[in-house]
Length: 236
Image (spheres, rainbow, N blue to C red):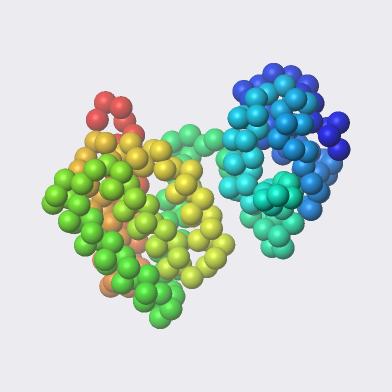
């Protein structure tokens, strides 16, 4: 199997490894449960640094496509039920969508999530209470002028609660991935404001949930994403 790990052409090192392993999976030259060559073998075979191989493995592991077994090597994941969703998420990463595409995709996903949250209102009381506490924390952060890192952690936690409150594990996983993918762009928004815009939009989303306001979903989601999109503008 180690003969597969030779570079045919030069690319950026991490992308080279990620894309090559993806192709091996597509061609079924690597199958669930297969053991990968070790870091040194891949590095030497593909002419890239071991650091680049390590970063590529982190990306593949994050998508659930490989599993690192400490002391036993690295394997193609064979966890039941993961293959379809992991393939989707992996393709999403490789597509590298632009801002407009992300805006549209996030808008549709978040509208669906809020609809699911309201539909499962009898089951997600704990997450609703945690959202309320999250908003209280955000309000205190705004008041004391918390750091951008604190604001970011609070922001991401709110969105993860939304995913969990959907009571749909597939939707939660997809949404969690979207938030991970967007983390850097979300971090940028916190460098341009002190949490006041985020508090306003999160509060509006929470109010829709708290009042089971199906009619207010689209407006609340659109306003939230508009703030994120506007703050991507380097001139604002």
